Length: 236
Ligand code: C5P
Image (tube, rainbow, N blue to C red; front, side, top):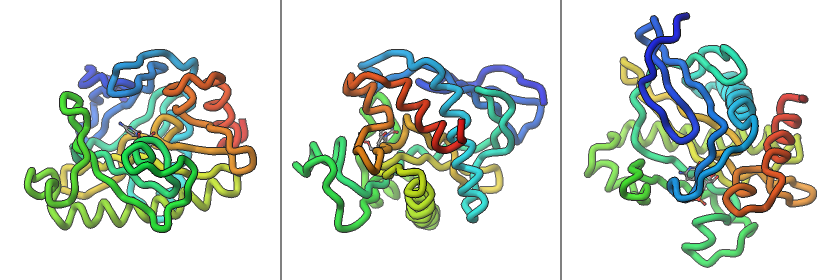
């Protein structure tokens, strides 16, 4: 597999073309941003941890019938993935109130939600990723009703699989963000990453935050939290 020209550089990852027209190489960086790029920093070895954690979780999801972009981990920071066109939605699933939901609705952080919440945001940095509902999605032709039903179905199933998987590792899955892509034949698959950058993970015994909130909120021991997640998931 040949790594060709860089196609895109995002806040946490770079994407490269390859000599396979149906595959890209994703390279994970240590750069961290928050609040739509207003806060910037570096989390030492984050790229390695997110690459390995995301691939580990995607493999688990694949084994339970969720199609993902994962083809093969190539190195500590690089993964070969299926080429997709990203559906420009951030798909957020919430089990426990935290973050922007707590702020918006005045719910205390840590309050268990009586029902799982599914939210969509339109991926647009200039607009600050505004929340949209299904009517907005169809009005803007971001996805068809069939595609959105597939995405919602996968999101709830992924929540169930991840919650159960993490529970055994004493990790409570508070909320997380997913992105989906479309392959050249129009199939919807899970893309992007599942990592401490994109999930809220709380230690189920101590309540300690083991995710990017340590960076966002200047809680200290950011690297330690990422290392702890890798240790619990991959045993190292
Ligand atoms: O900030 P908020 O409470 O809306 O975040 C909900 C979940 O989505 C958190 O787990 C957060 O890490 C994730 N998220 C993300 N990327 C964004 C916004 C939120 O990964 N741009």
